[in-house]
Length: 51
Image (cartoon, rainbow, N blue to C red; front, side, top):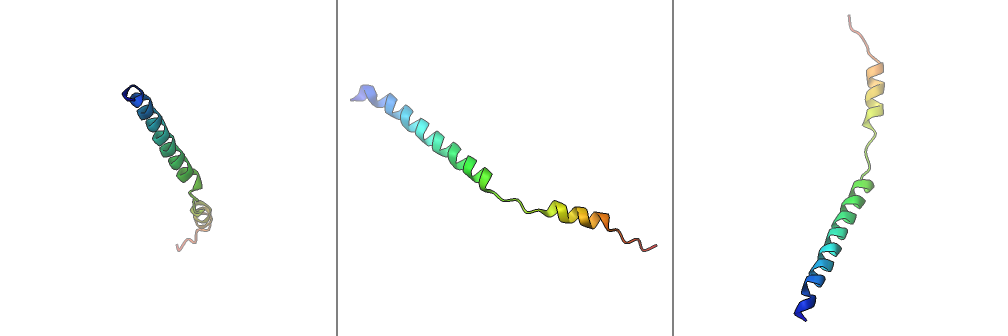
């Protein structure tokens, strides 16, 4: 039925957009940051002055 075609396009659009957002959210929250800031703070606190 051609009268129902816009509704199916809308459902497909909502489905693909929701999958896209879900994929981006899962990638954002599953990324593990390495703790380099703690190592840099330790190295900044231990200065060895040569003069």
